[in-house]
Every structure is written in C-alpha cells, then in structure tokens.
Image 1 (tube, one colour):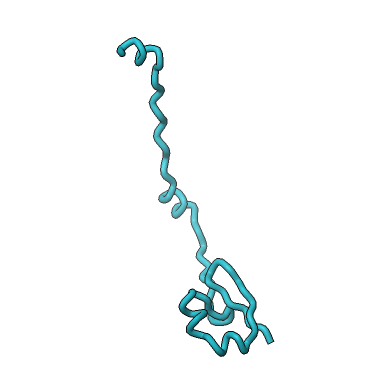
Image 2 (spheres, helix red, strand yellow):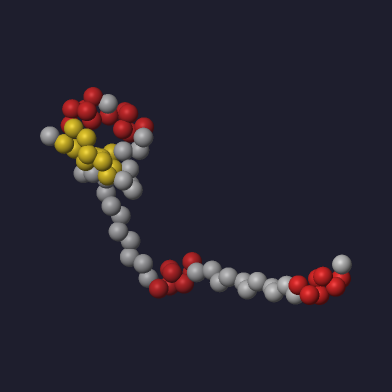
Length: 71
C-alpha cells in the first residue's frame, strides 16, 4: 500500500512500510501525510489586494549628450 506525503508544494508517493520505518526522516525534511495536512482556503477581497499593490516609480531619463559635454 502506498502513502502520499506532502511538504506544501510537492506531493510524493512512498510505500507504507518505508514511511513507518523512518517517520522522523520524512518529518525532518518537512513531509507529512496528505490526510493530516489541512489546506487553508482564504477568500481574498478587492480591498486586501489593493493594500498590497505597490506602484512603481518611473525612472529618470539620462541625457547622454549633456553628460558627455560635462566631461
């Protein structure tokens, strides 16, 4: 029988015997059985998104001709 393990990003499949032999090995690497991991579903509102948007500043244009004349 196989068991599915996840670290939040990646899901791997290992045999149940292999997991039972080394549970600390998988826990140390951040893997836990998929059944025990609860997925948090968060509803996002437009207000939350607007708070996180950062407007970028425009870059100043350099005038190459005047820079060469100064030197």
